[in-house]
Length: 491
Ligand SMILES: Cc1cc2nc3c(=O)[nH]c(=O)nc-3n(C[C@H](O)[C@H](O)[C@H](O)COP(=O)(O)OP(=O)(O)OC[C@H]3O[C@@H](n4cnc5c(N)ncnc54)[C@H](O)[C@@H]3O)c2cc1C
Image (cartoon, rainbow, N blue to C red; front, side, top):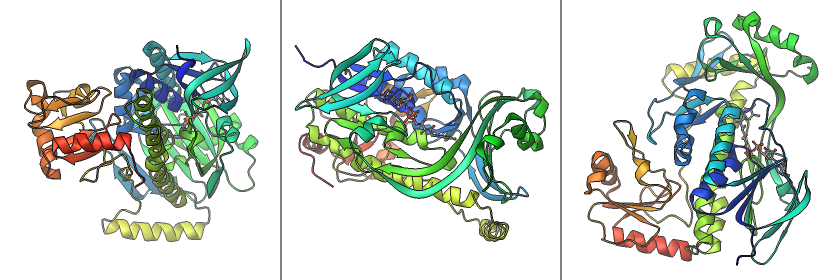
């Protein structure tokens, strides 16, 4: 009998802990997930996520339930104080991953759906239980937990520290943070406004040197405002309700607004030096933090969760060597850094308080915009490293065709998949074989064959996290996959 209480202990049940716990459970692992708090984090934080993340929620089977708590975005704009457009990012209603480019949402609603879902999947959820310390052994980790019933020790094969920005797991491991030296104080407000009094449904950064402002319609009657706190202003004073009403007055209908939540944050960019120490991994805000201007902090953490869950499961099931887990930071850190650097670049456009500098910025950006050029890119890179084959498209996200409302990923499940024409009759478990000649693939075959033709290949191996392992000839892909899981080498 195993001397472990679980395969995976997840410390911290914010959105990232929820997703890693749920996906690990879908991979068949036994999972204990704890949070020191009984309640979901109450203050205003994430307001948008992207289509890649909706695809992850699809993996967890919560996409329909989420619907009423989301609103599909159509554009994201940066404006001057006079509301001239500096930057305009149109957002697709159906992107390449089978979902819209951007969803505005209510984070507590998402977290409550996630927690319910992971409980239903069989995760042993323990609330009001805090991790207080850990000790790594030869083959696992012993974690001391403290709750209302006192202290106890849980033995896990692996641990994920998803315990947020002030992660105890990170400090216990002695992992430091590298700092991008971007540090700006902002007041964040969520308000509810009945639809007949509602302000325009937009997602805007108002680059006003007198006070930079973020204004965003969330789902339903919810609206978000973020106000930069100016030098000399006291956070306590500016976050009083009467001051907030003054700040919101230009949007009208203040008398009909209900201020739902408010908080003061310092927006900054930080990255942990090590994301893996032995059998313990850091994920989400515990591993990296970004200013919110690109709407990507939670998204980046959920990408960590997706990257990690299937790899830990493959190792626990004996299909892969433990060293593939080194690919976690190798793949995720460069991506997270681009996200942070993009957000900081956006923040440097927004957070200009000097009127002359703001006028120069406006003149330069308006002139550049008149030529049709964009100033800031929001394209994020593909992944790279030892767990991809050396081929076209390796590391990119596999597209998800949608036909008559049916999404292709239903056929992928949680397994690696070999997809193509004239595949070998048998493939080793847990790989699934999706031959484009089969009837059930028929609705998607045209789109997938077109994608394969673009890559100049007859087949593709897709990892359980929906990233392309590689394209090429089927037998070679199977051999490369086996080799990569058993003997990964540094890229
Ligand atoms: C103003 C603002 C706007 C934002 N906007 C966006 C956005 O639009 N899009 C986006 O993607 N992201 C956004 N973010 C970022 C996003 O909110 C965070 O990145 C995300 O919530 C981090 O999730 P997490 O699960 O890593 O950590 P958290 O949500 O912080 O969860 C950590 C959990 O760990 C628990 N915990 C801590 N210590 C222990 C312990 N010792 N034992 C047990 N449990 C513990 C805590 O109780 C908590 O529940 C925004 C953030 C802010 C502040």
